[in-house]
Length: 351
Image 1 (tube, one colour):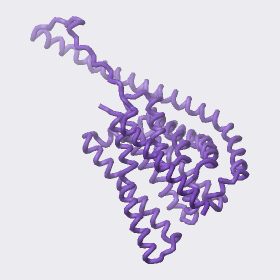
Image 2 (cartoon, one colour):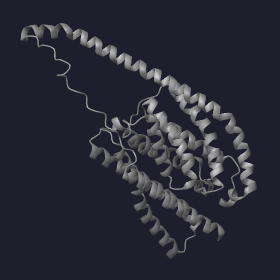
Image 3 (cartoon, helix red, strand yellow):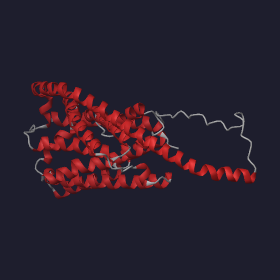
Image 4 (cartoon, helix red, strand yellow):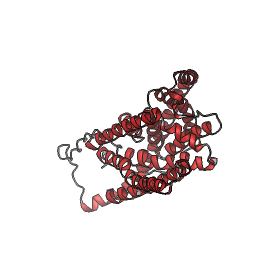
């Protein structure tokens, strides 16, 4: 049986467990920099890439432990079904339109909260494009989706999709551990959950996540980026970025809604046709076995049909509890870390 409580627990572990080795390695690197008097800038990229590798290995270990503990098969949890050409097209177009909507959320919240991605992308501009693609495009698209739309969403299989998508989006937003990213990651996570649900494949959210991140990477790589992290704290610069974002959001939002409606309708029809084909196949098999069953009944003595009272009653539907202890622990961890990010960032900006 799928359990949201188990999905929430895995999400909590996926947030906390990678922090432990990352903090240890960060401490060692920091101590080495102080002892050897190494410039922080020259070592920052090595530190970041070390964290990326540690994170990936930690997630792989957690996935292995989950599959071993639940005795589930990899292909049942991570459904790598190929998409139809039309679904590939839907996913790409939905993602591109969604990027413009999410962008305005990011710009709006950047005035109130620190944007950690801004500084990271700025430092990445000196890297070869292929390394930016691997680190900011491929890695998050694969590992974050294996966690969120793979394991976590699969445990919400018995929860209505609207509720499952909202909770999945919320956890995905909290996964980023800062207020600024939470709001647009929450929006993105909801859409990714719907893409996974209606295509019945994790390839859809992986592709969408990759396209989304790569749109941001290419935008930063080929554009003039703010020279300092404090740039967005300027009211004039914020308004200058917000106005055009409002305009193109007004254009792309209706397109996004139409695409999502068409995507859902297309896949509902596709899934209905698949169910009809399976039913027809089962009916054909039953029809072929009917003479044999009748023959066995005559030979053994036909059993009298059971009365309705004698038939076993179906098991009552179990209400799935979503807001478990693990869920609230995720909220606490998210709030604590986000506050620390805000306080430390504003202190350093003032300094």
